[in-house]
Image (cartoon, rainbow, N blue to C red):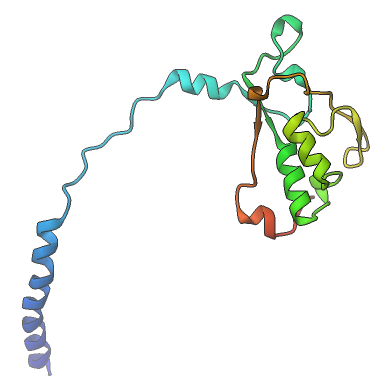
Length: 155
């Protein structure tokens, strides 16, 4: 039996060589690649984007008027409004969202909760960002199908 296995092994060497030879001829050379140097200006700019759930325009207002002078502010309320409207989810942080008017307000004005009562927080919440330039507001679409087809689990 060992002789038969040895014979089969020797005969397969020709097949293996027939496969490896063309592969060796078309293989791409190894890349001599290194990532570019860190862009300090870009890193600094990104660091100046604020993610805040305070709904407070002072985050992007100049320091001269008491603001934090961030370059832009992340607005979760567009995401929350859209997900809640499309899925019907209303629990956890999505409590108080879900109408087309919320989606519209997030697009047009920025903050949905701009001093109105928030049932999720149990109080009036936020201030108006309606007069702030739109380029200072970063609005995010749902990041994956997970946002749209699974119920929201919050503590």
